[in-house]
Length: 447
Ligand code: SAH
Image (tube, rainbow, N blue to C red):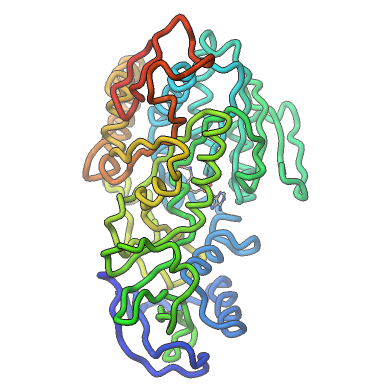
């Protein structure tokens, strides 16, 4: 908890069970006393029912249906608050498209599959994957594909629809339904939108989550002489339009998510990530497919990672991929909140139902997927030097260890039989030797 410093303050109007202790976020006093509508909403909530968990704070700030950061913003892209790999280079999505086709082939070329993306942003990643599916039309021609997007943001779902469909077939919208939008992609594939993974039909599916798990709410805990104590968010009594961190005086239910033999002094746990992983594992174990998860994170080693994610176009033009550290309690609702993904927790939550691979660094995964060959093809095709420069800049951003190359990781969930030669039963394509090597985690080999 390096950025959080303990200090004692007298507190007025707070239920007596709350200790007179608080955590600063390392950036106080805040220069800006900006009272955002979200801050007003949170203060009202805290005044009515008491301090809230960090998880509740994150959930309100990001996905509150009226004021959440994700719900009405388009925050992605060079002009937005931050930029993600699929927005940086088309190569990223293309290589992921190749990964899904290769997994589809390795697991026996089912006659149908669903591509399910969690948190699809502007829809760019799915669009790049679909371009690969079209280009490999001769391989996939007998396969019935459908697209399923899990998205809570109304604003982003509209942008996804624009990116992916031409609306020549008008979209069907029904805000009350679990499938709140339906249509057909530019290449004629059925596409549907949901707010929750649980509402996506089960069936042979490939799941994709890029920079999705890092926005799921985390609970934060601090080790104390009395055991684990949860960090809450409260109103600062010394500055009534500011928030501060406080420690709960006694054990709270989310403590159950901490490992018994945990050695760190401060931990973040993400029960929602566990729920999603369990759902994915159950689906993959019973109906087949795979999940590919890419995010920044660690393997159970980091402590205090909650922050704002801001990557300005200016920073990008200078060649930086920056996660600027801001006071996460300042001006809530005006910037993203994110916490590093704990891949060791995701692995545990799969509970042996499926096999897991990774995390491997993004630069290793993309190299294994053949990014260098793809870059060369695109450079040869692009006559225009400025286009070539753009391709090279994108490559550098994705692969450079100082930028996204080492910070981001890939992690996969696969049915156990996928990793065992000769145990693929009737699903295996008889004419081809099944391969136990999984591209990205190993070098891509076409069979
Ligand atoms: N995958 C995209 C966008 C990442 S930003 C990319 O890489 O460019 C996070 C995305 O997750 C946004 O689309 C956001 O609206 C969505 N999101 C956030 N919380 C969510 C939740 N609880 N359920 C579904 N989608 C969510």
